[in-house]
Length: 150
Length: 185
Image (cartoon, rainbow over all chains, first blue to last red; front, side, top):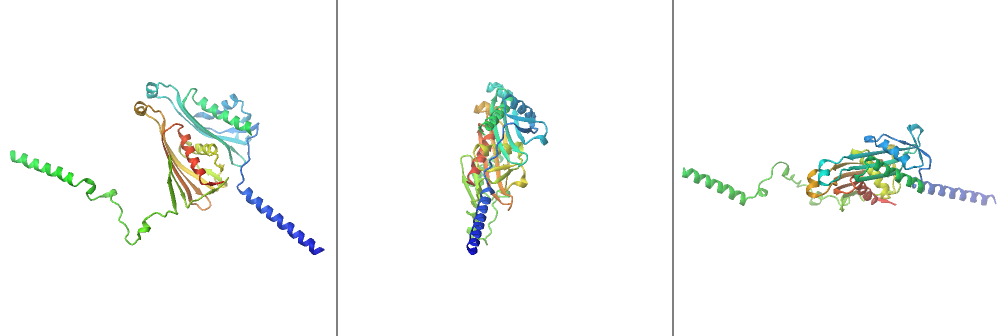
């Protein structure tokens, strides 16, 4: 009787060990399930040409459900990025008859604690009607969609 | 007077004939154009690149090379090193847009792989606008992926886009699309 119990205990322990090992293998490179929750505190890091200011304004204009904070210590997520503007030159104005600037920007949202990038987006506007404002609002609009679908 | 002119004429004719008969490619090469002397001790096979070491395949946009057919596991942690002009942001956005199953981290010490590279943008000038009627830029970028544990370069890719409709975004997405090919889902 006691021999049978011992065998059962050993088998249970072995099964538990195998299950733990399999779980560890699965979670080694598990799919990141992190999502940006509504009302998350976000810090917008300085971006070239002051694009961070346009981005903060766009987050408010597009009613993105996040809270923008002015200090990285208070934030859960951080937005980094890059922006580039090429104003229309004489050639573009005379030959292409186009006064609008060429804008491009790319941003990423990372979790400050885990260090994982949870969302990113790039935008390119060959002839931006409202300059940086247009690209910033495009970023904000898509961030809002990403938060809403999550 | 006539004699001198005749001598000069003959000299010029000889010079032209010599150039015609012996074109420049037949002349002995000097400097950098001269090929390096082959090591005769090596077998002919030694001069050929090892096909198992470097596999290169032409694509519509650029060249990719996967060393030893290396693969990356899905959701491996990848660090994208800063690049000139912030191109790393476009690569990260491209990875998301192309649904590449990798986890991008901002801390290099937490990563298993590192993506580094270089990019360059050539914006359209007035001549291109006037003669080609195009205001799109020319983009080129080159990236490599290193395994941070072993230090080995496991993947490389270069892209060149003439008249890139979406600028650096196009180049970043091209890189991401080809990175996806070596990720084992």
